[in-house]
Length: 404
Ligand code: C5P
Image (cartoon, rainbow, N blue to C red):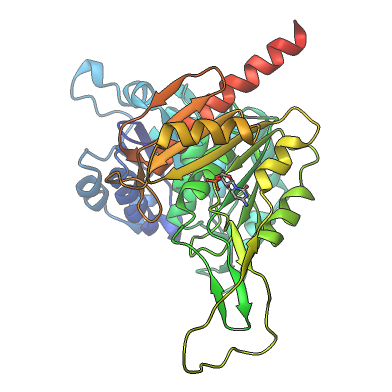
């Protein structure tokens, strides 16, 4: 998402300026090209040399340093930027931006900027609560600027409260979200992810190797694209994406209840979970003791959640997954029809870089018209984006059909 994107990072004079070294590194690590502007007071907290070394570009500090005429810094930087991040943003820079003051390089670049701007305020709790600052932030948001609210916790001034610069990962996530087209705004996407656990005594259960990565990637991308997202997740070790409503479940029966009770208003269901087809017929109250000889576990069928959704009223888009070790396309197609899905995402267990635990996938997307979109190896975030592109196209088609 940030690969090849041009980011201007404006650093102002707050104690959190030191975190900009890490922020610059992370932006570069994600493939962005970063140019840094530092105000005079930011340079009291950190030397430009650090950010110059990390960004691989000169750090811009002065309004009137013309090396060549075409380098009029504020115009060149404003034209270079696809996104500007101001982090930390002091009360002072926020006040100046809200008042239309441009008296140094950073505020002049802000004035000339066409690209989206993300302010990351960081300051003492009292300052953050000050009505002038709050009014200024509201004014900036009303003009279309983005604001990432500060985090709560211990502050440099020894007080506790809201005012800390958020973690670097949260700033980068907010930046990615600003850059993402909100083409799923107004949709409510319900995603299931991960394995289910089917217990047979208080300490044991049957499960599978699903990591949840594919479903979590779909949830994150849908959230970035402006959808309201509910993620019903089996047990995984993944952190839930910010801004997503997470519902944790254990067994297939719990997943079924969680999904069916949340369907009202849902416009898209994406079932990436690897739901166990069978569960132990009995759940023992006590731990099963080992004895000589073998032990037989009787299993019974779990309900098919996606099939139940497919039978329900309401024209929502239903996307299922098929993971197969043989006859991938035929099996996937018949599942799509049988379970009344609009799309099915097929992946072959035998393919290198595809499937459960890895960060990549090799998927084929089948639709009801008989099209098969075969995608190359890509990371799960990108694969999620491609699935959502297809969902978006179907939603558009559906809306057109309703009008026609
Ligand atoms: O038939 P199969 O289990 O391969 O179908 C896979 C698709 O069906 C996935 O989207 C999965 O989440 C869904 N499924 C379900 N309930 C089950 C089994 C599978 O919703 N009990």
